[in-house]
Length: 171
Ligand SMILES: Cc1cc2nc3c(=O)[nH]c(=O)nc-3n(C[C@H](O)[C@H](O)[C@H](O)COP(=O)(O)O)c2cc1C
Image (cartoon, rainbow, N blue to C red; front, side, top):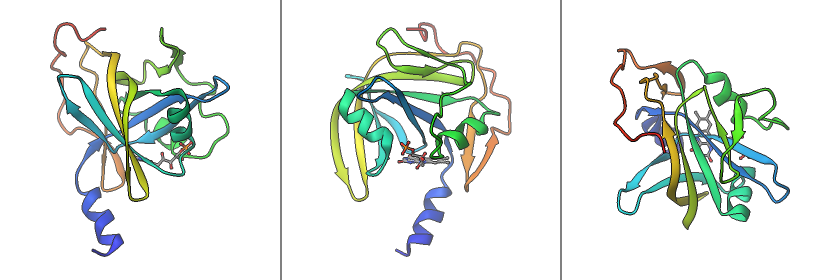
């Protein structure tokens, strides 16, 4: 298939937008914008993320063996743009903290986050598929709206999603 057509086909499937975060060898937070991520298994709980081989964040994920996926809330396309850039300090001035496990996690600007340990890594063309075992996380009980990405454009879901998440969503 023509690469442009491939990209256009893939861009036709809408997704949310996440920020994947990890820590490098010196304990500094690293992160990138990610939409190639999804749930894989319930028992055990697994998710996957596809990272470009040249990603700085991939190096941090490999060396620390852990990462978090922070699912952005509607209206936070500025964070998506920032983490898709090569800015030196992507974390400066934003709402983040270190979790009990020491991972940088975003708050206020997300609908949920998942903390993972690396279970497996699969080479896949110019990307690497990281399989993560989900060990902790949280989901916003207020039913916050997610950021939407479709045909390379940010938006929000056209109808209000007000349903609360299930009991026990807070880990
Ligand atoms: C909406 C959006 C989704 C993206 N999804 C991915 C993705 O799934 N995997 C990936 O490797 N890069 C993805 N990128 C590009 C990275 O965020 C970008 O290359 C980033 O600069 C990599 O940062 P790093 O080298 O510090 O890890 C996406 C960018 C945008 C704007």
